[in-house]
Image 1 (cartoon, rainbow over the protein chains, first blue to last red):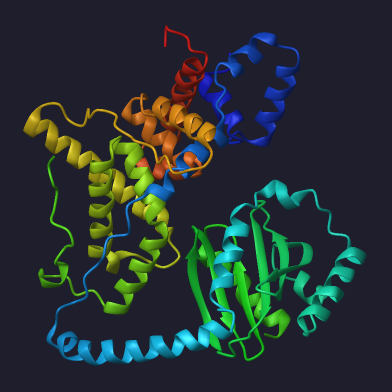
Image 2: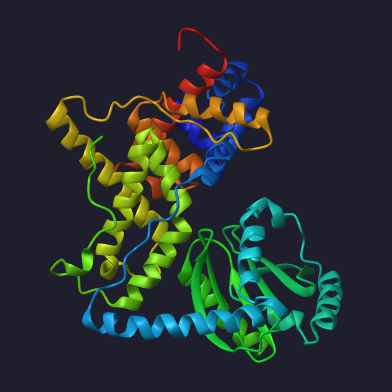
Length: 242
Length: 187
């Protein structure tokens, strides 16, 4: 006799594969079991949507005070003056160019919708991937080598596609990890020209690492493990020569 | 309503709060990203907005107090949600001692009406009100696994219970919700 806990674990995809296979075989010829599963039915997407709909009504993030040390008191008026100057300057500067940091958040929103099923059925066909890479390289004005970029430990390269952000090409190279987690490596032209060393951040709960050289800005994002993303980003930098 | 603490906290003038400033800023930035999720989780636990806002703020405070203990590479959201849930349990225990009725607050959740899609609003409100009828233990487990997407193992770690207990709570929650969806008066 299978317990409700067992059936729940199956519904949630938490049952080991062999047990799930066994249960599915039984289910085919067992209407009583099917009825029990029906009695456990839950629309998970409805639940997620209902809670997501609450988010816009969240109160504003509470203001956290800065430390009132003597140093801060002394530095603050100078800092405020400098910030005002900077803000005025940045206003002009930002008005004329796309803000390079925004694109990471846009990618995060897009990546957030990826689930293992999004990519697992996309068979990595070398001829197709080569074609995609040549289009991507041409749009980006930078060579991208599919062979080098497919040699990232444990990851399967699924696709390279050209997306766009504020009129600039945004290249997304999609991978899947062995556990199915979708991971993306994204590249844009660095219009701001500012270079920066790799830094990690959690964007919408997704682990990410980004860096910029003189020509391009890069982002690796996916899953919730910053350690894994850091390792992948390191290898990609080596393989892509960035 | 009982205010747990004054906000904003004056943690810089309390002894033993020598957190390196940049570290604190980093944690604060991560908290800001997590804030809407943290708040709605708090709302799911408390079942009313006033307590939820207090709980989410108290959680941020506790997280910042403990910023030095956070290790990069550990799961920030799990850490914060665990702190949030534990604070709520402590608060309920304290209320039980003070007032005798613990955290059996009235379910009071006015949904935002600004959304253009009225039909979706009604649907969401129905889903939420059904979830809020679940017993506390089932509800917190359901929130972590089904709403926040944590695995059984992760949720078990956060709630400090065996995976088997996560399974039985979820099975019970599923049964109750499926029954409510059939408008069965026996539920």
